[in-house]
Length: 293
Image (tube, rainbow, N blue to C red; front, side, top):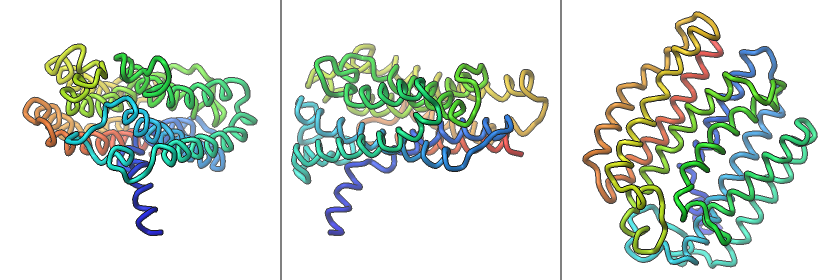
């Protein structure tokens, strides 16, 4: 029983789940700052986001295996289907289960948010499957970066803020979504850099495969540093207070990761990927703290 639980835990890729939590935290903190906050809606929003990402991770695991993108000798963390730890049927059932529970929570969120949330939630689930599955998988056609930026940035922050009682189209929530979405993209960029050779062999035409390593490293550097401009926007256009600049404590870490991206290769990029995911989460926490204090 314990071993089976551990296998499903590996399949869910817990170290990546902060990518779905980070934008929710930002949206909630901005809502709190704006004068409205509902704890039950907040908890359900977080749970739904995590379940959608787990479902997407499972879909990625099984569909990559079926398309031949995962094979012996891959450099990334263990993929349970490719490793034979779970069957194709088991992983697909797990994917359906995750999306179904997310849909269950989505009923409550749709009751709160109406048609916009129905559209957002349905699109997120469909896109999670279409990322590596279906006749036109986004990840195989160089559209993965756009998918991550939109769903783990713009939609996640703006949708969370809207569910708490704010307007759906708010300039500050959208800018916050841009910032956290850029760092979320950095996680994917490192993942694709690590797998560039195996992806090229299997016909998985990620942006890294299409544009090359140098382009992807430059993209990573730019996307990692740009979000640190957001405190200036908040200071001049939202409220004049210095707590917005708390996230600057993370700037040395971001600069260090940017430098490392030029020297790390192959399996070394696994550690850089984890550090990038950690930076995104810490950035969300520090920027959120600026809203709260």
